[in-house]
Length: 339
Image (cartoon, rainbow, N blue to C red; front, side, top):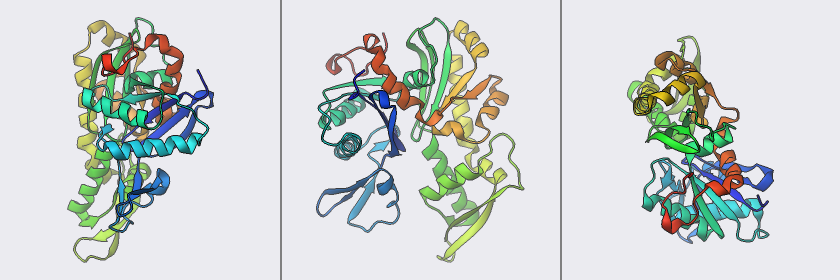
């Protein structure tokens, strides 16, 4: 693997980039800010994320990736280019790039990803499915005839797959993940407390208070926002139990998707998964009590991968060492899968 090779986990919420043997060199929000008058990019990543909800009308702060796929080609190209320049400067000469995509991605969506990377100066672009990348990043040996189950909960999508012999046997993707949970929290605060909160506040509440296994009324979190009744700043105390009610539907939708994949899988592989358990990766894997809730509800051993947030990105970078098992050539295949 060349030190110029770049692996990109192009997520809805965050972009994580690996570079050669250096490992993870960048992890920032997938956000870009630009001036609509001058059409100039002002900031990307953390700097742009801090502008959300604080920007004047002529400065647009956008997420070019929605539900795991590119929704704005031009902004995605600019964002990827800016991030690659941030980690490599002008010294990088046409790197090879592997980008991970959701398990169910259309030809048009995958072409948009490749075009964005090509326009950023890439020499060759490969695509790898997120569940496979997550498995590699979690150091799971997927080459054997043994079933392993992965649930990658990102910002825009939850990818669930059973992998065996370097291939995805059964998979399912749902557009319920971290961002959907944030929206549910925002909606709950509006309906029950007439309090309007923003995306960043919802994220803080989710991280600071979430307990899906054994929520308590006694543990609370101060949530600040704007009263919809008075139009003035206000705050309320939210308990773990209330937060569980807010995100309950999203949580059980994820578990229902896991159940669907198990139902569609060959019985031999389901037997392997009963022995090996289920592996959680992605930022959503860190939701308090999620692994215990899955174990209790589905009667399957469930564990959280080490460095769950960066698993997909690490696997994407490590995939360069498995190039002989990757199909090359975008024109002949919409997604580069393992043979």
